[in-house]
Length: 258
Image (cartoon, rainbow, N blue to C red; front, side, top):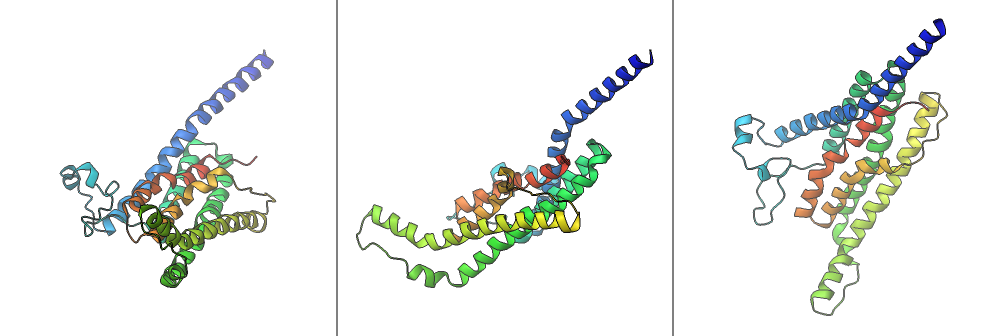
């Protein structure tokens, strides 16, 4: 009889754990998105967009802060600008949301692991790579004209030649951004490993994963910005950056030590 009760109790615990596991990721996705959404709302407000329900209701959806794209025919029309500090604030809000969701919907025994992962995500996956790309961007802009002037140009006239010349002119900026992003991701991974070993006293070799690249779509926005001061393509990429910045929060909230 006692054995049967123990088996029944263990089965109950197993079912409860399965239910928690089933709802953990959707819950963390939601709380991470809420964190990013809150940060984006603050950024929109600071950049002059109204958050009043009446104002939002009377504004066409395409002109909402999160959807409005740059229009070269209306260059003075306001659009959200996401630079380093905005990207970092949204990433931090994502991690805070993911950590909160993980704390609520997962077992307490996993909280320390999530807390460690939150530090790894902020420092290794966000701050270091964004700082590298931001530094490269500023350095490039300071020497932009000189770099472009040394790029060879075809003397032939015609659409094909003009397009090729345009590619050559944006090549230095594109290469600088791609290289700096690669350096940033590798350096961020090293920082994460250092934190685990020295701060948390855990010998964990964090390898670079596909999800580590998701937050860096913001840096792709920086790359496009290097090619043109303002463009519809650059503003479109910046509009989808918040979606990708949910990833650090999801990674944090669902993390468990192996």
